[in-house]
Image (cartoon, rainbow, N blue to C red):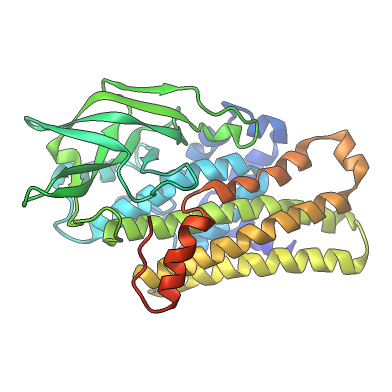
Length: 379
């Protein structure tokens, strides 16, 4: 399929050999718990996709990033979901690094190590349950001499077994004594940090989405990124950057899984010409919305306008993916279904997009208010 070929070409330019290496492994092996995808991602330079060139990365722009994610999602939905967490964390932190004075020497030194050491970053933001507040801290922080002691858990936390660094949103006392949002950079080797089984579904099982517990984990002051937000429910620069990237990247991975099925239908010429054309048009038009949102961000759209744009694209895509995969499975036929569960699993793997915050119900009223001219406040 032409559009997937173009996505694969972009992926090949940034990560030579990655798609080929993944395709050499049977689908069930790619998607099993502990599968080889994350190691292959590291081996092919995946860590540096959104890291600026001055830090040794590839400096991909938003459009390139969603195309790479689509190519990866077409062959391994688990890997696309897992690495979204690293990529949006990288985009957020390096955006802060670009604003002089917002990161200290220790934090900048850590970012300098990411590409040379192929460090993977997991996200401990409040992400995972459909109706929860994606912007509110999920880990408590107690001030102590020299830093903070963190307690809490993140479940699910993708990349749990492979991460080198966990980023966790925390609430700390501000200059006026009021709670203020901050970001803790927690090395995975920290005493008190542990990983426990959590994911029980065979879908996306290779994403390492387990529980990460923090039990009295000390984080020094110089690894706490402070922000100026007074209210964790309002969008600030830090949250906005991460939020926009997350929605674009997670959506494009699931879109890739659906596109991979559509490609099989077209290659095998299953169904009538009109049925195949209808299927391809639905697939292509839905992803075009996401590409449009990525182009807008690349060209400078930011803040609430960018957030609303990616959410509109995400919810429209979410609806289209279900129709696309259902129709693709039907056209592939009963014998395809009987002989292997691969395509059925790939079709089902797009459904979790609906579970990523903010859920459609939670975002409905904020979006309606924004469409009516009010500020966008997500909770």
